[in-house]
Image 1 (cartoon, one colour):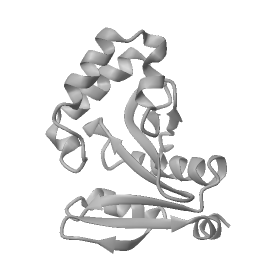
Image 2 (cartoon, helix red, strand yellow; image 1 turned 90 degrees about the vertical axis):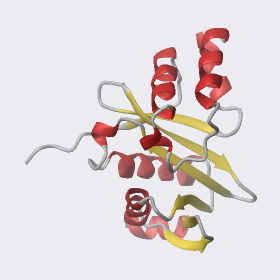
Image 3 (cartoon, one colour; image 1 turned 90 degrees about the horizontal axis):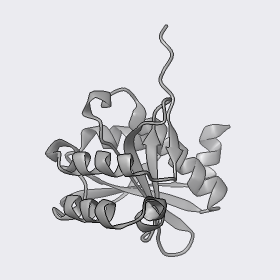
Image 4 (cartoon, helix red, strand yellow; image 1 turned 135 degrees about the vertical axis):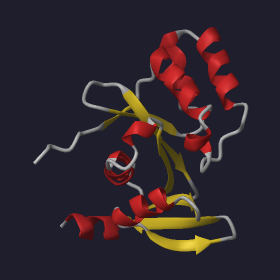
Length: 171
């Protein structure tokens, strides 16, 4: 049996990671279900050209916590954003930018790591993820991590898991 690849979340953003992000946000297959502006690639390019490398982490974390999903060789393969909502609730946005890795459980591993941070480091009471109805992979990912559908509109469904539910699943 082949060992599943492990991943980790890295908070430190390097210029190479920025160029990976540009490549991912220019790929319609990656951004199809993300809520990113069409200008984000240009904004990242400007940031990489104008900001000192040691300040990239600061800039990427201005609107919540930003992590890179990295493989065992410390190469960025995707990202996770954690945004504090009202009260003790965090929204999790996750994407695997490397299409060749889709379907290999990387998103699930990244979401599990993000839930660990939300509940054990941030001491949140609830985590949510907003997923487009047509995004079958992400629906499967959030569901397999114990998140349940709590709200929906014509385009998106909100999935949530409480700290208590998370702890019960880990027991």
